[in-house]
Image (tube, rainbow, N blue to C red; front, side, top):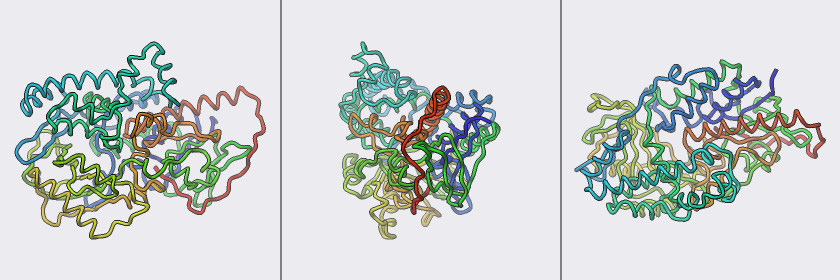
Length: 518
């Protein structure tokens, strides 16, 4: 029997780690409070329709192809996946739309038709800069272990490459640098939106995040069954190698012995012995003591003002009219600075930009004859633990959202069936976060260095998930699971080569508020 590994949370990071560790002969037990895998990658029923309630944009397919191959399988044999030719459709009013395409030449032509030759040239320069930033950081930082401070990054990319360190533009805001490429404020707004992929404001994030646009330009993929189908495939891959899943019960307490992790106590009274534990949970839950007081000392906490964005999310089953929806659509507000000022002031935007995922739309499809499944997102403050949204506020947010849709020509049927998830709902789902969906905000040049890394202050306890290094998003969560796997295997091998040494410590005590997050 191999090393015993307990994984708290069956989100994408936990699932990736479970599959990789089980394939290497470890005895893996995954503990998940929900009755299904996926974490944020889940579906909820509205009007009899199962609607994706979590991430919908799938990029970096190679991350998952590598995971499946390392486990002796092929991604394409487990999920039905195809490339999207249209990355997203964008609009600012009802007159015109602007599509970005998988083919960058088509995107450049579309931008030229939309805003002129200078805008097309700006797009070419932007693409080149975004690609260079991605090339500098992909292996050393995005796919590598967390770095503690910029000198470590210089060492990893090569001490002589000072030009590369400056080229990632960490000390300038994304919004400022986009102004160098795009005089048309609509295009500046379009590419600034990528900062919200990690729950941050384009006015406070470093221009380094231009790399997200490059990642998306390399391919957006459509998965039959949505992201939850990917989660199911990862679970089956892990089970194929012997991983066990304990659904419907929460991890209540991290157990330690001789100063090192020894297992997990479950809310149902059972125990899982472990040589290592991976917490696929938001580090804020650990820091708040939701897995016991000893676990609370494993990671550092951050102030509420450092949280990423939360969201108002409508899961709708509705008839639509007017706007010709693609799978992914963004309908922009006329005043982007005010939108983020509203959020900074602690309230959802009065006049918001709106993301619409039309989950039944395939490319080339016209209007749906009947109701279709929609996920509609408006950014909101992460105040779900300090402000209770009233029915009146929810109605006001719904009206603001539909007003933004109408401005761009999209009509929803009156009284459309829907479920509204507020920051309160996300706080319940992600305890101790205020509903921050992406962990810590990527604000300021040092944000990436301050994000929680794989290892913690407690030997044998590791972190994974979209709130840890390398960051938010489905592929980043999977990469965090890979990094956790590498750290666990390395550390356990080091222990086997070393003589055991008694360490101070003991059994932690049960937390009255224990819960697990994805």
